[in-house]
Length: 122
Image (cartoon, rainbow, N blue to C red):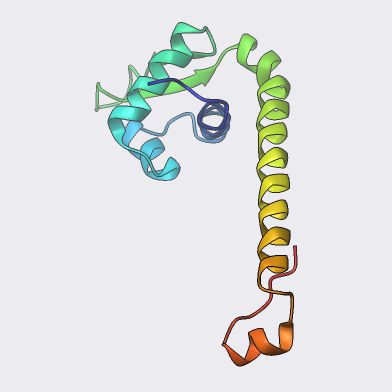
């Protein structure tokens, strides 16, 4: 399993906003398994982007805080830029697919309306 830019971006953003979240809470927020979240956090720790601190005064000795390192803060704009580039490329592909489908159906909105098909503007 590889840590892709989208997952890295999403996880770093969540950790920045909610450093006290458990892996289970982070997984739920991302819509992925706890196992994938654990793998991704370990990868970020290995890259020096995240560090883990234990809440010593907390009654739950298993409570951890995930914190972004200065290296992560410096890399943040780069990760965000790569994520944005990928999303823009996905948008361009979808826009081209929509245009091709419109040509395929003849772009006749009146007959499409009779069929119960509603046009989507890109």
